[in-house]
Image 1 (cartoon, rainbow, N blue to C red):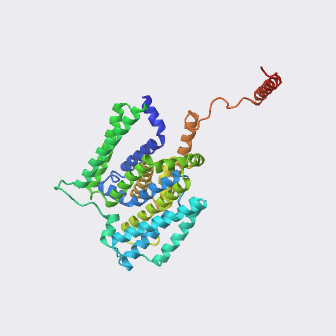
Image 2 (cartoon, rainbow, N blue to C red):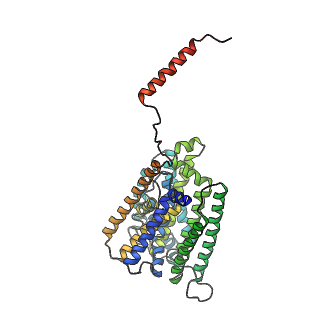
Image 3 (spheres, one colour):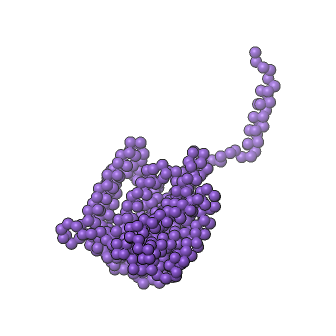
Length: 428
């Protein structure tokens, strides 16, 4: 029981958001009379929110490194516009246009990284300038008009699904197979992680609770896969998103770069004195955000089947909200890729559920604002609770220095001793 309580206390942000997501899903499932979790709606939920989830992955890394990026929506719109122009006016093959679009996004991110890391301008100012710059350049490139007529292969990135394979089972076989493989890999990783923690005498869940945890994860993954397989199968963009989650979770948890990002976010001065090249890390963090912004722009353009001057509006706000709702700390140093995905899903389910209920756009915006405020307030409360219970940053119950009167008496006594010692004759 103590191990369970310690685990819950140590991961209160993550588990709190998972519980909140489950509660929101149950609420809308009941209020929409079961429409929310219908297979077709779940499939649409993945397709419609994929670009925000992609941006949330990069944004949580930026926030962990104690920065912010306000330009992601404008950069996404510009990259999508540039890719569409390349395919329609310059006859680029769709795959080459995608590749060049990703290079453009990466170059923009490197441009941001240069100003932030090596010139020392705050990321807020740099990316605010880029938000205006690339929104304007999007209008220039598109000449204020929508550009359509994109190749089918390109449009499949945002709207396509994995092909059917195997016998006719009434479900999408490839989706079920991918889910089974994902569950098997997850179980192996969790077992190895638990064994490693036990080897170092860390607190671990009792084995029965550990089995229950794996069972719940398996049920959730397989049920989600069943809903997708009962509709049209796993969307191509869903496969891209799943790959990004795996790759970036590994980078942040298992690589030197990931540890350096957390170190800089936790205490940049300590990280610098420890030998971390903070400028290089900041540069790479911003460049990576540019890459993911470009990918989000390509996905958005493919889903809309056209490049639109208004594409990407408010993407930066949704991505920032997803990161904070998912447990990222305002002061940096705290946040996970999985947490950002959970936060993005909370926002996506709220949008979808309220739309199904016929809630107007103005009230949707107000409710999402309140959710973001409550998430940040929860983060502040959790920090104070941790400090009060003797966690990291906790203050001692006893004063760290004696009262002034007592301190003065001790200083006088020490001075008297030193004076006596200085007057003693040298020993022979």
